[in-house]
Amino acid sequence: MASIQLRKRLALFVALCQLLSPLHTLPLQAQEESVQNSQETLQNGKKKTDPSDETADGKEGLATYYAKRYNGRRTRSGARYKPEGLTAASPDLPMGCTVKVVNLANGEEVVVTVNDRCRRKKIPFIDLSRAAAKKLGFLGKGTARVRIIPQEEDES
Image (cartoon, rainbow, N blue to C red; front, side, top):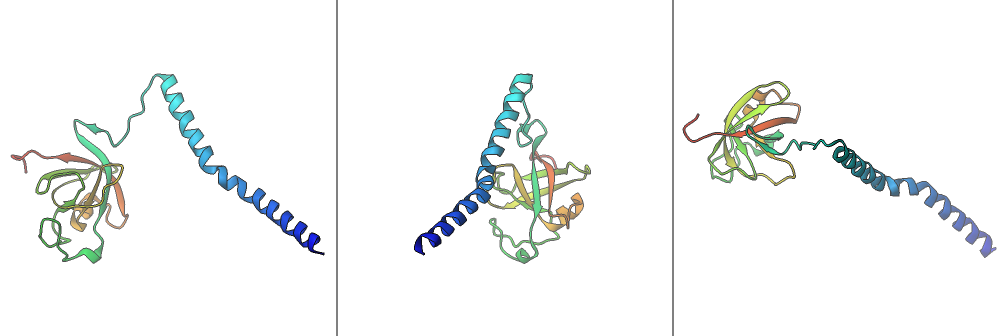
């Protein structure tokens, strides 16, 4: 009697392992495809350009905007966050510098002042005030691909 229950449990375990084995190999399959893509790129003699690479016109990256819950909170510079101001948070850019942010989808641009810090990500990243996001045309969408161009001191 005990051996029949053991056989049923073993059969159930084997069936479960067979069901889960495709899930276990998904990351390996994705890694193989990325390796193949990079090898094909090298064979074609073309180098893929990383959109996060720095160019003469700044960096391409991702922009988001502050959530409503941050209204009135202090930023890293000590100023209070105002959603109607043209300010931004960046992990890399110096505090107080001005940057031009260009929405790559529609060409809209805005100049903002960096007065806060945000968490570091793998790609260039900027967190904008709600007014800046509205001027760039992605308020309500959440994120946008942008070009971040640091401005010189004498430019405004």
